Length: 59
Image 1 (cartoon, helix red, strand yellow):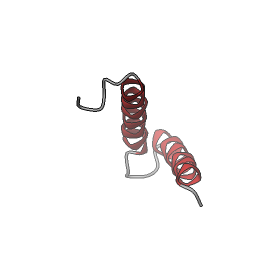
Image 2 (cartoon, rainbow, N blue to C red):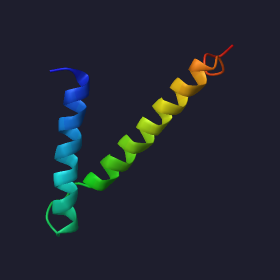
Image 3 (tube, helix red, strand yellow):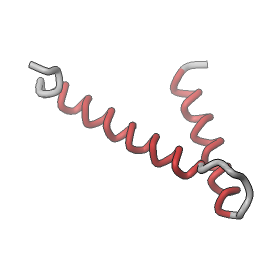
Image 4 (tube, one colour):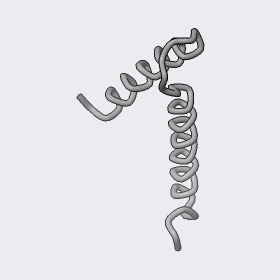
């Protein structure tokens, strides 16, 4: 399994867990996990954009 598919499976599990959390079941904050993954994904895209322009490589 590639990292892309593992990440998508993890997202699906977190979405299901978030639904259960909103319904009143579960003790893990799956919505916080999704929020952290979203921020990480935005940071990765931002870094890729800056690195593509030559600004994000520390030079």
